Amino acid sequence: MTTGRPTGPEGDPTEDAHTHDQVNAASDPLGAEGDNAVGREGPQGVRSQTTATVGTRGGARGSGEGGSGRRRGGRRGGGRGGDRSMVPEAEFTSYYGRPIVKPSPWEADIPAYLFAGGLAAGSSLLAAGADLTGRPVMRRSGRLVSIGALGFSMVALVHDLGTPSRFYNMLRVAKPTSPMSMGTWILSGYGAFAGAATAAEVARMLPPRWGSAGPLRRPLALLPYVDRPAGVLAAVIAPAVASYTAVLLSDTATPSWHSAYRELPFVFVGSAAAASSGMAMVTAPVAEAGPARRLAVAGAALELVMEHRMEQTMGVTAEPLHHGTAGRLMRAAKALTVAGAAGSLLAGRSRVLSVLSGAALLAGSACTRFGVFEAGQASAKDPKYTVVPQRQRLEEHGPTRHPG
Image 1 (cartoon, rainbow, N blue to C red):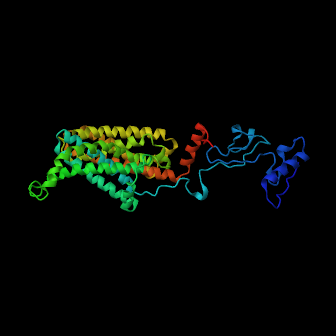
Image 2: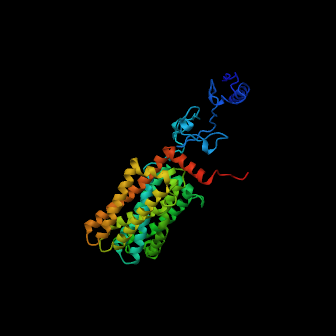
Image 3: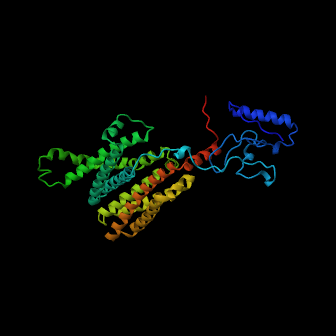
């Protein structure tokens, strides 16, 4: 049996390991006792662990062992002289307990902004349809709701940015690869057309002494010419307003948002359709709200189906959608959306049921936006949701190599 030599003053572990191998080879040339040799630094027959990888499979061995040499602990074969793992079961942690991905600094005003933007977009779509099919009350309510929701979402966005000048500065450039830049331009274009359509609607509501017979009669006389075109153009841009916020979230490094990039835009579009239809069912009479009820059912079905598919394709990053605050919000969203859609099918002759169903759809859409937001924040705080998808991509596609 050989004994290991203490580390020299220089403390070079590589040199010391080579010295140990030379001493062992000289004193035990046949290697008969190599497996049982023990020095001051541990068993000499055990190869050092050169790489420790975070994950459930434990550490990866150095050269010569390959994938077959991985151990979760214990001894090879269960007998004496087995190969014992020197690395304990790995845990999902990071340096100093800090998250690998920094959670976004966004607060509750951002999911409120997401919800209000979707509500505005869907309301413009319903208002344009009501204008073309002769439903004046639903047209009026849709336009007023759209501009009110758009104003609220802009206030929430500027509050998050800190100052309005940051929003204006984003309009100085148009960068197609930036969802933030494109979203700014989409909101600006949509806001102009939605504002013109709402102005025409408000002018129609003014009394004669302020309208056709008042001091504003000349500028107001131009509004009928932009009334319907502006409403239709706002409706054309509305799907982009409803979906770009999902692209904005998916383009971040937050695990639960990034892994949902395929289905999240459809979830947000369905949620926007359900919310705006619910608002129309609340504000418009039952006789005019038929298209809103049908859109509510279609939007709720799209949201629920795509959300279910999203959870299946997200892998481990779907877990935050089922736990904690996000889990409670997502369960409430599903229950409210299902109840609202079912009520929409039966609310053709009941004003009370129409209002209750619309309120349920509105609440369900809000819970969806806040639930997705909270799930993303929770996934960024847990290293597990960053490391496991990276390992899976590495096993499936191998390391990424860039040409030198």
